[in-house]
Length: 326
Ligand code: UT7
Image (tube, rainbow, N blue to C red; front, top):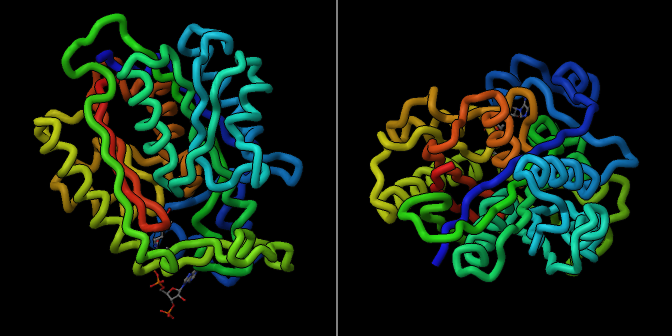
């Protein structure tokens, strides 16, 4: 058994900003409603010519550089995404070629907004068991490509972005270093609470005027989000033997500032130690956690040795959390 430590991080968002003022011109909404109900002021969105792999590529390259490695050092590539460039091949496979990696294994994970936590857990197993030395883990999504910009209850939330970690094996096992504990869950009965009905094998016609389009029951998902993230953080604390007072930072999936605050409240955990980047990036699905993590590391907020709890939920419903010493 070895440790799986984060040796490098990187992130990337597209240049283009979609502000609340822009949305006011597209649907019947206003800045005050969006800010008070979601905490979001703007999101980054891709140009028509940009895709998920373009964002993932830059984030991955930065993470590999940050780890002091080259693409040739990477032994496996795992990408969490629900917006791959194509039905197949995977974004991970495209990264293998674009980054110049050896002919290593690569695959995408679809676990909606828990995509990054799930991909990281998969990588954790490979690294801890000693199968691989350096695994590239990416969370990348372009939700703007599947957002219905005539639906004011969803289009105000979503954006695009990417974040990446290099997860590396230590030479010997040291208690409670790197990833300490992770868990993922699902409950498929909530499918219609948040899903993309078109474009898959059940209803393949996605070339309608509206495109594939995310469909969501906002109020239902809100409640499930608060319950599931609070529950999984508590479970992870119990399983790892840590007290919440020992945790330096919680990074929740960035879905709505009110969800983030409700989780902090439910856990009785100080809000100033809960990382929020939603104001400037909105919800970019698998990218929210690695993007928030990388920005916090680069700004000096998260430091080496800090205990960081990631927690996420997403359409399915799926949810999970991961505790690590950075
Ligand atoms: O990765 C996970 C993704 N999803 C989520 O986490 C979403 C979770 N849910 C939410 O974030 C919130 O439910 C929303 C932000 C989607 C909606 O906020 P809410 O406080 O739950 O509002 P609501 O749906 O209860 O709607 C309240 C009112 C309604 O009007 P009436 O019926 O009271 O007259 C809506 O029609 O607000 C109206 N409304 C809007 N008004 C202005 C809904 N969207 C908008 C809008 N601008 N964009």
